[in-house]
Length: 276
Ligand SMILES: NC(=O)c1ccc[n+]([C@@H]2O[C@H](COP(=O)([O-])OP(=O)(O)OC[C@H]3O[C@@H](n4cnc5c(N)ncnc54)[C@H](OP(=O)(O)O)[C@@H]3O)[C@@H](O)[C@H]2O)c1
Image (cartoon, rainbow, N blue to C red; front, side, top):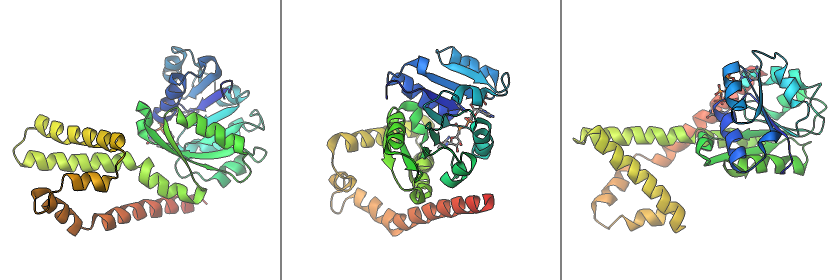
């Protein structure tokens, strides 16, 4: 994969996280190009050696830069995907791997805009990509080659873990890991509020909750133990932790999490149906 030319079309939060991960993994910067809307963003990529063009200054930037790409990564907003694919369809080499990061845009929609391209991949990374600790779901079109999926796996491995799934699982995966950081941050917010309500300062509450979170995550990763084992290790029979778990269990967290996940999947289906 060392000689693949990778072109990012739309290089904002998610695109730039993957681009930087790719550079950090040692991929030659001369093989990386990027487009943005504003010239200001393009300048920031040129400053790190990436060939970057803005549509503000070069209206055909997307077609120009993707014209010799082996891998194209679509990092524009979902509503822009069809327009960008239509813009590049003529110039894009037929064997290029086209990877969309757009939530809710189905492979059949990509295929309709690129009828002569077979290597179409849908990806769902998450924001920890910004610190090289993403989880990315990948689903490939039935016409995509195994090499195309390997290229996508290679790319996203530069920012974390990769899970390959069938497209019908992408909406559930998006709800679990794509939206996953929001689940975690929301829990942290509630937990810190509770700590503050017990008289701790904001600073103390942040230290108590966040250090516990980081430490517990590190212990989970390092120990190789199941979370249930680690939980039982801090839960003495008849003790205080046991009461916490019993209270949370009474609220049926599993059912609540399942409802939250179903609500997200239903919303993804509604959005897809509105587009058809
Ligand atoms: N953020 C997430 O958690 C997340 C997770 C998974 C997937 N995604 C998907 O990733 C995609 C990007 O999301 P994001 O949060 O990274 O958005 P973003 O930060 O707004 O980035 C969008 C990028 O597209 C550029 N752009 C706008 N119009 C363009 C055009 N016509 N041609 C080329 N570039 C253009 C923007 O340029 P400027 O820099 O000049 O504005 C910007 O670089 C979305 O499809 C989203 O569904 C996001």
